[in-house]
Image 1 (tube, rainbow, N blue to C red):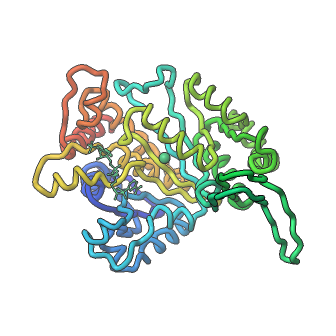
Image 2: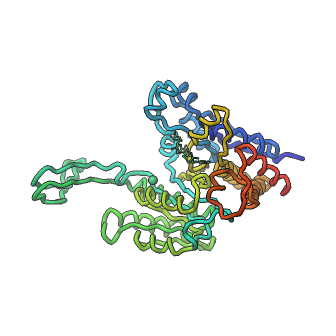
Length: 402
Ligand code: NAP
Ligand code: MG
């Protein structure tokens, strides 16, 4: 069989622990036999990040700006325990945080839907993709405990020294206070990433804040989205047959529960933090959740939403059998290959990505799955496969479809 050719490389970011094991199995079994894979390889495994003083993470983000498309394996974010385990020079920052800051991107998380793994919410038939604004608000807030009576004010000192003041509260006793901020630049990037991604996947975009209560702060989010939509995206949305829909956050939550899914839900930072955990657990499994970072310039980085599955890796190291679900990592690859194909007008590559995704879904729907899915499936008598057998079963399904 002739392998599918690629004209431009994509950026490959390798990672840690169990997902690193899956990564090489996926390449061996599902990619290299079918695609003449062109990647620029960056090893973001913790050991190599430590050796390079984390320069490799920065280099991989710059390469993503150069080539436009990246696929990333899950990586360890160091904590105190990892400092000792890996004998680290420093507690290196989260690679995802570094890459997101460099690309100024927004993360979109979407569940992979298969028959037999049913969402808790009966009427959810299509994926709900959550886009979380990843800057500011309560995550960069300054807080004070107020011990006793006194006045708290917001003070803005302009560069010329002039002051604008607003009283927050005249305390008559003890209390708490919090100062939050956001940046118009950051909100604009968030809005553009959302509009761009909605056009990419041809799905409606929903956005919600509490602008009726927060007439300046949240209203600014609403206004920026609307201005950018009207000026830059309205015509393209009409052509694509999709809509931009703004509503209040509480109304949005009520509508989401009653909806059948199939749209992107853009959320402010805190709403996205909370809602993405709710939506992903309701869809069934973290192992079936994909994630893509989209920059306002149109750079894309695909990954699984889950981590390195440390507990399984330690079993693997002891020589015990694992049954780790590789679907989200495979979908990171297919997302990146499809996007590469789209940018390069490479029909064969796009079609391969579709077929590989279909093979994953069919394998599970045929009753062959990893343990995490077997525990929650409505299919009767599923066959539980180990990590490698599952990937081989997908290969068999894929070969039958080619
Ligand atoms: P995790 O790797 O997502 O795993 C948590 C648990 O979820 C696992 O122990 C497993 O449950 C289940 N699980 C997750 N993915 C699975 C899969 N593909 N197949 C089967 N089961 C799966 O989270 P963690 O253990 O809290 O974090 C481990 C490391 O990952 C940490 O060092 C963290 O820094 C890193 N992390 C990286 C990213 C990223 O790179 N994007 C994201 C999150 C966390 P059972 O043990 O019950 O089987
Ligand atoms: Mg959360």
